[in-house]
Length: 440
Image (cartoon, rainbow, N blue to C red; front, top):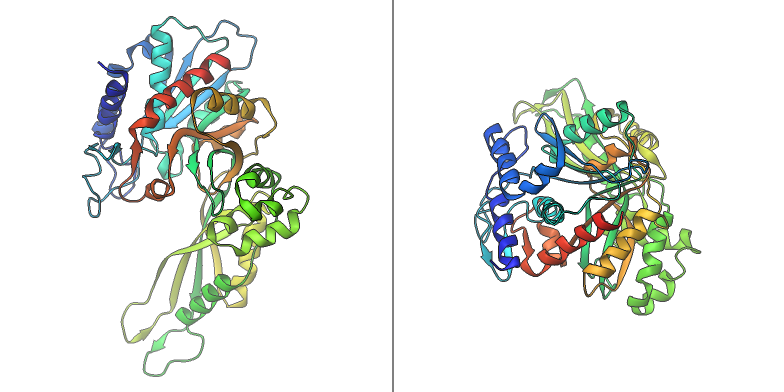
């Protein structure tokens, strides 16, 4: 069988098993069990060389290397996906149909595609008799999309058993054509950190009353004023992180006249940071904490002023301000409008990898050796979350990168409709993981 065709069929099999991790509409446990069985059917050589430990559906494999004196290295992805209602999709989201040179389906990019490439590479190396120079660990979690309990449990177990890693490689940024406006090139976006998440509920209370005699500043009005204020004011501190400045410097040669400014980003952090905060949501998220209002509730009848109403904000906290100070900043604003603030869910805060360090440079080397057409490798800070934030407990250098080449349209389909991966990027992705495993 043709190599690419084999890869296509393997990834299709993975996509067609629904492994949705969602409290309200998640897939049955039998689906996850079947997915595990499929992994060992497709990748028997991995199971033959690795010691497997299961953590409530999440998997950790140890591939023993030739030199136990070196710190081990961890490669990780995840096998759960977000829900996918069929409305709006070109093809059913779990059909893994092929059209327009792509496989279509939920998980092709986030993150069964990455998991497939990682396991495919390891299986081929194991079949060829390869022995890693140090212990390699492979990890796949079943609940990354629901706050990462599996990664939390595995990283805690590793810490408690005294196992630390020199490097951790997780999913994250991709190889993207024009990742930001004006950057006319193809860039490997390599995540060196991620924003932490805090979900907050802002509550407005009153004595209630009949809608025929409304007072001023009722709960819904106060919530509306609060949201409008946050929407129109810079509530959080602006700062250009060194990694973001370096990203702009590396993109400068491909940005025309704008590049004359961005090539000095490392020296003009203040002005460039302010500029980015005004250019739109993508660049604003790079330089400050952000908050999005996502849910609202309150009231019992159309003619009754509610005694209580609330709105939920999803806050992504910058490294420079941090979660605690970001919460303080938004709480101070909420108090101006007579609102209470409740933090009902939060993530651990991630570390920041060194973009001049060994792990980042290894990714650069692997990209140059295996993936054609990349103009530059750029560090950046992820605004979304990944399981690797938990592994800061056992590693100082956690890198977030997925070796698939995508365009802006495909980027928008992650967690959206019509998620797809190009067939042409499958072979290079496997070669990338092989290079990494052979050179760590």
